Image (cartoon, rainbow, N blue to C red; front, side, top):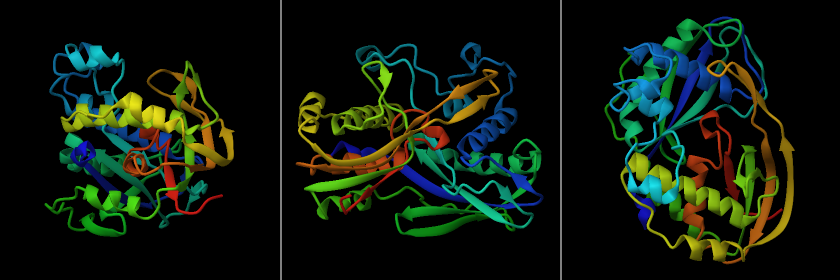
Length: 321
């Protein structure tokens, strides 16, 4: 299976507030924005506002991670009519709605790296340490990065960095893909997907509020294909049309979903952006075996647009609604 070439690593960053830390209920934007601002200051030597006109963009770590430019010459780009490339990282903010953290309290978020980006883990750790010194939130409250743990497998974490030693363990943190796909032995007839954070999927020109199985399959396969090609150096060789036709035959048994409007302010574009999407649970029934590996991979890489903020996170449940 082509998905065996999908390189993934997942980490938990544990932070401790050093003063009153006030954050929004959904924290994906503030973590991503703070990271990008500090990361650029650390890495950028040209200090240009627009990376697209920088001579160093093709070799720049910041450009690759945060801007992820589209290659100017690529038959794959032209064949698939690609205008943007997915970033090789995802920040999963805590799902808790808590907004105030007292000095000494801890909070955490997950970081998922894909393909080549895994080798740049030390840059993420260094940047989030510096972000704690700069401050987070409107009040620029300071925090300390206590430690970083690696999810070597779905059920076990290993300490790879702590603030006391400031030493990063040189170990293989890449997830064993075969352990992810073990789920397909449990059930093939029906599944329930719990969409935990807003999912933004465009279908036929507009954002959909109803997750028909073929719609989420189209979005997921496209995202997997691009991540594999641009960040792992492999093509997803599947019969796309055949799979989508099979996806159309998957029945929706029950759906309890609703739309959430989420707004964030973009300091780069100097405007408020609306990033709403659907959340909730949907039960599907049909010949699911073909789709389970893709769906399990999707639990890590998320679904739809704005995944770097933590949008599009879902989990597969064994029971039906």
